[in-house]
Amino acid sequence: MEANFGDKVRIKTVKEEIEGILLESSEQGIYLLKLKSGYNIGIQKEDIVNIEVVEKKSEEEKRKESKIKINKTLPAIDMIITGGTISSRLDAGTGAVSWLTKPEDLLKFYPELKDIVNIKKIKVPFMKASENMDSLDWKEIAKAAYESLNDKDCQGVIITHGTDFLHYTSAALSFFLRDLNKPIVLTYAQRSSDRASSDARLNLVCAARAAISDIAEVMLVGHGSINDDFCYALMGSKVRKMHTSRRDAFKPVNTRAIAKIFPDGKIEPILSYNKRDDNRKIKLDNSFNDKVALIKFYPGMEPEIFDYLSSRYQGIVLELSGLGHIATEEARKNLLPAIKKAIDNGLVICAAPQTIYGRLDPFVYSPGRLLMKAGVIFLEDMLPEVAYVKLGFVLAHKDWRGKIKEKMLENISGEISKRLEE
Image 1 (cartoon, rainbow, N blue to C red):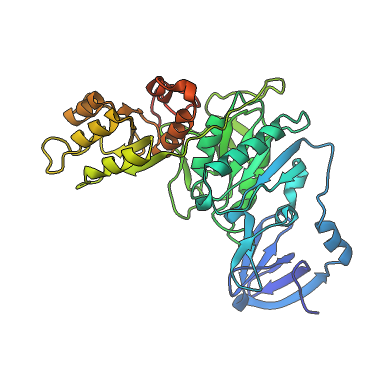
Image 2 (image 1 turned 90 degrees about the vertical axis):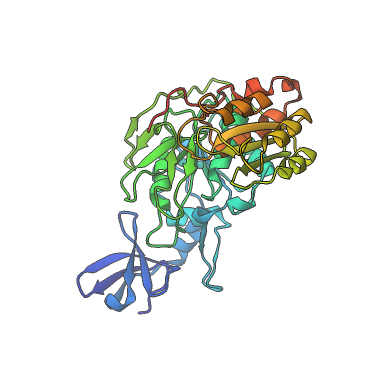
């Protein structure tokens, strides 16, 4: 009997027999099986001796898959699906990876989610790779999360998102949504759901555990190591993608994780956090000024860049080297006069560290002191990406004009660490 996707099969290899549900695989030469445990494994076709169909997928099962089963005894959450690898799979017709445009498709790959939470609503505001997002998308996600958290029956929100610019969105939500009453959990996958090596299963399971926890924070939840053993919950304003492909690509910067989360539901707190309070009134403020830019100082940078920026932008975040250095008086291309002119013309210039880890200190060397005297705002250990988002947020508030430096240095969402930690 020929095996089809969705059939329960028993595969005999040269070493063992393995039983599971046959899935569509995006990897040539690989049979993909979902085991009873919920894990996906891949088996090299060349190692297979025989495939036996144990049970054919019935038409009734196919119909059931198109519906979201509701277990009203479980805590209710909402999911916001926005795109990215976690929401993609192989398109067998084209051989390319395409979106899981139906929410039910995601749950088909990871049915264990429905054993942890009651997925009350699934919202799909858009389906985009994260590099195609902008501030309008951040606003839309924030509004959708705000509406969910104001639903008394909703215990938390999971947001699935692409990895590359996930930390921009987590930073935006950290500023847009204040006084959280319940968890907002962003999660991701480095490898699509139909691959044997996908990291989506553990990330989604741990995200579900976090969404019904008492951690009322904007947090990013994903693999804590390269293995499928646990996840970290990381602060939305202190996290960065630090590897192109590893499962544990996201790391906390200058701080520690909020908590360690295990798939069985065990949660080990590491930092203090804002606790759940269903009676707290959440605030939505998703104002954003797009006339901001993020640029990196590099050797040989032309001073004219600042003339260009000051004519088109209202604020920039400048990534400085070391403790806060750029080319100054001893350099052939002294940037100080151009920076001072741009600031005098109304351009807000903030400084963040290129090094990612560590804190700027303008008082150690003369370049830092000169920049500070010129009016550059040194943002301590704030991540450049977070500083970019925060500057757009601050500049959008007309009533904060005259208080921009004060607001940029105000620790609104834990974006500035009083004490640096590894």
